Length: 65
Image (tube, rainbow, N blue to C red; front, side):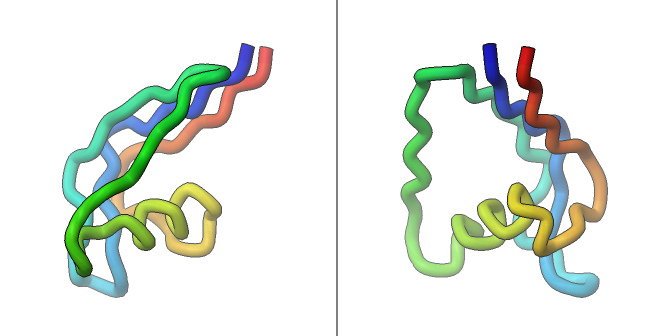
């Protein structure tokens, strides 16, 4: 089973916080849709999950078992 787990994630660019204290779990075969207005942090979240942006705090874990 595979699972993406994000716990207490705070992230952004330099010292500017874009996403604060986000937690979510996405299990295998679940679909997650990111929706929001321009500037709400959708791309920032994806770039942080990919490792392009380092989180200020929190954790992102991809479990494969």
